[in-house]
Length: 134
Image 1 (cartoon, rainbow, N blue to C red):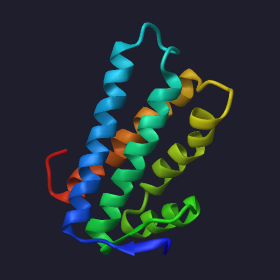
Image 2: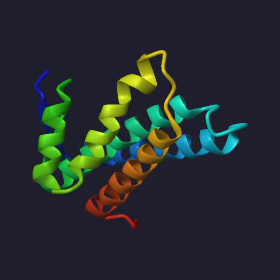
Image 3: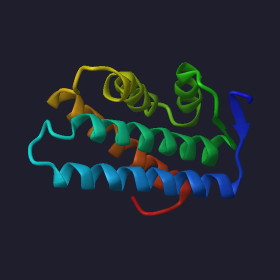
Image 4: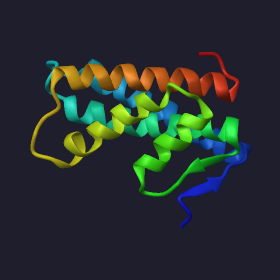
């Protein structure tokens, strides 16, 4: 599979739907938690997936292509060309991916906060790029 793929309206719409779905699920998980640390890793992981999908929408809308490989650096670099400044939000989320999804260490309150801010920034920009209200 090529690390960068062409993107059409159908792909962009599908990625936007996934971004919204993961972000909505993250909010629900957080709202239903007994305490702030109860679902920190699940929340961060959902934010990561929402942020990746939102980044794809931004790239699709502005460049007509999106990162599809496993190289996170390439995804960050591509996003930088599509919307300078937003790559830092994707880098933040990708930096939390392994810890929240695969390690034995729980996400901290600060990481939860950073993940939430990063995904909201990317989601807002994806909505603008896609042509929906932010």
